[in-house]
Length: 72
Image (cartoon, rainbow, N blue to C red; front, side, top):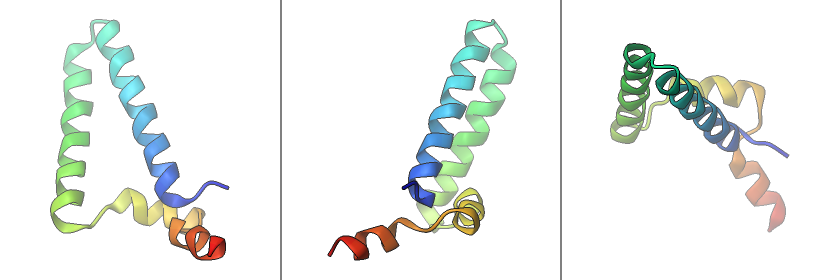
């Protein structure tokens, strides 16, 4: 079953694919803006542990810690 952290990684992969598509379409300005926004979000999440996207996903999907405790 999908959990919030796994879904976050799937969304990040989709955004990276979007960036590749924008760059392939020679829309470099849009690709740069999306890449920069993603870099800022990841940097903030890495420094502070606060990730708004993950908070939203945890309201939709269960957190992964629940799956790990069920396995034990």
